[in-house]
Image (cartoon, rainbow over all chains, first blue to last red; front, side):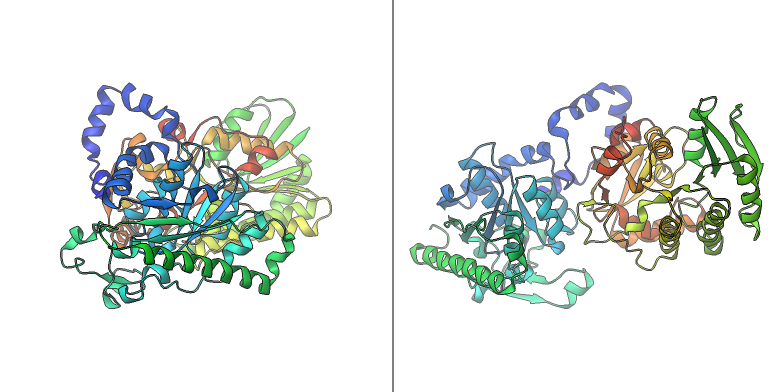
Length: 291
Length: 308
């Protein structure tokens, strides 16, 4: 949907506009919102798409949040969550949930995996909205300038798991987020999301079209690819987001980032916390669509 | 008094530098080139050399000694692949080696080399900002491998020669009036091939700011490797609009093929694989340029493209 908004930019009409009234486009660019940061985030584009995000958040998924107060209102923080949906909207939903709690003062950046980041058109929109390519160096840069980041340690494994395994957390990589937290002295806030799995019920993944299109996997849902691009519309399941108590990492010395046993232990602790919160949310949910 | 030996007077950087340096006090420039420079001034002299001559380092060495040069700036390099890869190898690698050789023979310790940021390579795993310390990954392209090899020679010169003072300017995309860098030719193509769906933010430096960085490296002591890049990055498609050219969105392999064939016909400024630099993150951290060289770009990326 949002994809349609920016592609056919008809350069010819713009050009004639340029030739006749040169003042207009340049003056609009001089606004501070027209600024792009090094990750491709653009406040103006984000503002343009704000209505859409708000619609998805309040009307489409009717997100209910719990425990936002566990996210510190300022300073660096790593929010760790479970991952779902082959076009992952969960990062943007968490970002929006926290931003509503702390309007205009809690900058958050979801980290997204390479295959999503490099999806033509969709990846660009994610970038403009503030998503950043998941990379140790990028994450460190953000945390050191006191941004909050949202990470999904399940990675691609999380968004490609079949429907029958939904809400079973996949392995948590190599614990990169724990090392990062210790190194940069950032608290870790575990977060659980329920409802995201049902936006794209993944029946199976196909290998051949994935290879042809150079994707990590090719999704088959009840509506995609059957209904073409319309099948990419997320389903209106009801979403629940819960934030858990922060894990303080500032008491570990910085060289603890190299301590594999400690890193592993903390990783597993965060993973089981999130899994427990997911089960808790699931047990409270009465209906997938109406909550 | 700086006596600077300068090669590549007809490159964009060399030409604009000479225009600004003409008549200035405190610097005398000995230009080494096949053709005399287009700028005439009392502090600029000319000596004819041929970089492809196997004994060119002796000729250059004699000139350095005779003119009592104390600094050497090597700008005579290819910044985009040539159709015959042997020529660009001879100039970029062997040519640089001979110039370094001439400096070692005559005791010139200050060496400035204009390299390119393309040596970092275009990779999906590039971080958002490339620092000078980031490893270079030429990924099998012989032109970029040559560039890296030349850099290594300059670094080696810096290690082996006592009190050596080297600068390696890793230049990003540069535009400017009457400038024909590969990027300015690309952005001003009548139809600009663009990979559909990719619109990364890129940074462009105005030639005037690039020359200021080059001038600063002449007076600063041992800057080492420095990224030379513009400020306030904007998406590629905003730049084509600013340049008033028409972007032609094609699927990535199509755009690649189009550029490759146009390049063979001489209608595109670079071969297809350069397109990866306009798909994957390729922003340079210019903190060192600001802090060590003391050069803050006067033109933003958008202004640099508008002014070209």
